[in-house]
Image 1 (cartoon, one colour):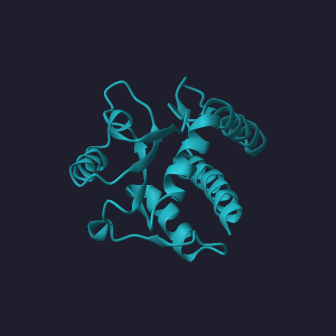
Image 2 (cartoon, one colour):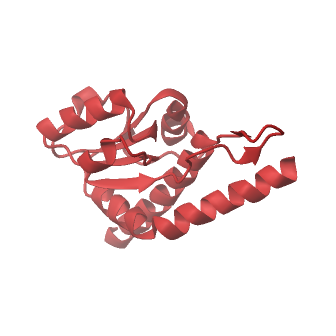
Length: 165
């Protein structure tokens, strides 16, 4: 089972890389323009917040108290799906305050988040990766996919900022 999960996870990362290539670049450029980057994760995506702040290689200038953000700042928002009501409410507040933001979530038909975001990166994770004996699927690694996207953005931001130093 682990071998199958590894294969499926590798395929997921490849799909994200291929389908969201331009969004990575656009998102990193937008984030690099900010005075500070506020990282906000909902539910299991809180793990991305911790990685950005407390990981071995933290994101330069990363903060989490998004209520303190101004229009000079940028927000990096992570949630499971684009229909997450809490995330949509935050996105609407950010728009009111004219704070640009990048949203990372799986796009769903009733989702509003991707319409509100300046840049949206789709996690491409609509169902579990592994089949069970009853035709269902399990193994939904949303936080792993989000961390993959986070690192892709972080590496690109670091490259952009290095050009200006």
